[in-house]
Image (cartoon, rainbow, N blue to C red):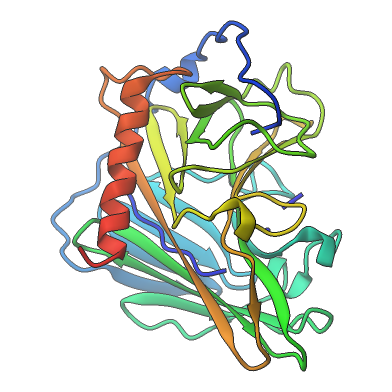
Length: 331
């Protein structure tokens, strides 16, 4: 299961009571940062490079790359060459970051090919990447994706716009589906427990949901649905912290059968999906709606414990989210 609207990127859970079982031991892959070669950080303005269908923005030491021919998919978001996203070599079917319309019940499976797999038309010009999808006839929807790096915060901002090109109003929510490699630690502030129809239950500790992924034991397809409370979702791997930030969506504004935050664990053990959705709104014919999400990526300080319940880890992510949110709101 997967979903989308306009997103901005900045670098930097099931029904019932909280579970009280013992916290699993943290895998060494989380606490031992991967060796990467530092990139010179004296660049002041982002550069845009286009090689065929690949559109790449760089502001050292950060980079973001999109494949226009592969559903406008973001295939890289990196710091010092370390890519936070699962790549095709890791997971041939589910990789990178996709943008979908929600709810899934409007299209079932597979996702609308015009947004998910078919080529998007580029109109990139420095200092941003801009792409537009074809129209999905049944839904009457097309999407536009604009990605820029903000030098002030060394952040990547992605704006997704959904346009109703049909003849009748369409209610829809934006859905960002980001695939990461197995074995990481995902967490987010949650409002209550997991929601139906969750089959995956992240651990709730002091109002924060934690998923410590172990591909050796998680051998069934499972998904969780939850109402986030602070508008951010974070993931740790190899000592790097990846944070996604958006405006919090009240439960009554979430798409039917969906949730603001959804996590999916695949039985193959090749990837985990960390997903968030924007508000479910009506778009009149000829009108559009935009959603902004910030992504941040930062190497964690050695003293920050990388384990479920880590207050220091939550506060680090919260600080990055605040930086992105303040920038987005112009403060």
